[in-house]
Image 1 (cartoon, rainbow, N blue to C red):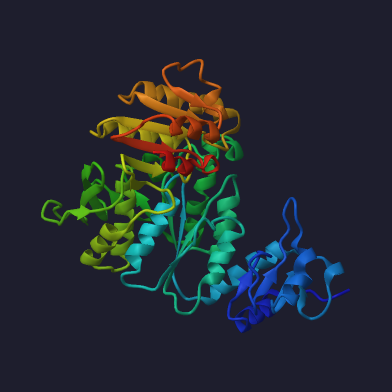
Image 2: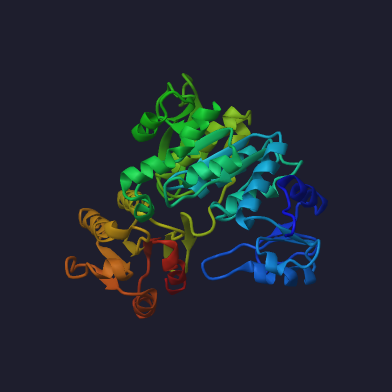
Length: 439
């Protein structure tokens, strides 16, 4: 029987290979270590020797039958080897790690925090959506000796996952953005979501770490009992407190430290849409202040941050203004987006909504609640796309329903929508950003 490669030996090779690793057969890099992961429909062990022939220095495998020479590194389980290597690497780095989870706003908070902390530190944050059992290890393994702080986003769709990711990343600080109706199917309902997301608090309590917490969120406050907390929110008693001054096209706010007057502070004029982003901006302010970033640099970072990747982006077309929030959606984020849009004084408001995914048995009722909310709003022009919304078309006759985005695009190509402000929101799989060209 071939000898298994230990985490310590694998780590030496990882350093010798300049920390270059890959898990994707389509993105093989010369001199990298290839991890042959398995999926439901693939087994990358079968491509291990091809990876070496293509220039990879080593291939980590867990199928002894594909072992060819000393460049194929046999382990009991490739995924576990990747996770153990990431944890081992994290323990060698003497830098603070901030873990971020929550139902909504994880990526926005991550990017805002990185923008602020980068004013003082070489801060590395999760790239894209690498926030799961594979993405978190890859994020940690991308950290090197030049980095002074790490910001690790952690996503989950079932209980136990956040705890597992915390065990790998071993964060010193934690942030739960909020707890809402996301991934209800996997978590088993709202209480399951609360239990799953709060695993980060339990981990940090055990480690005696610190959390950054929205003191205005009663759910988070209740879950954070006996934890070392740094508060942000509207109350002047909090470590950082702020006030929203405008949430028209863009959010404008003021902030100050505990017990200090707000009105004398400069107005921070951001390029972010939506009242719901105020608390995200205040969170980044709080974390920046805690780590010693000066006030002017915090404000500059927030004012210059421009949303990307279809997250609360404001786009101008020839005839319309579009608020594109189509990266993802769940009942909580959809509710907030509609509520905020309804409060705006824009002329000719139009809403384009797509189905919300991963709701399981709760799907029909949660989609119905969104339509009831729309009925109670002042928004009259509504386009709904996806099979979940379409099932409700006979209950809400005053709206336009489409089974697919193809049907919606066909309608929009012949429908003259102009001089309007549109909110576009839906789950990632709906790909509603593809409608922008028709508006």
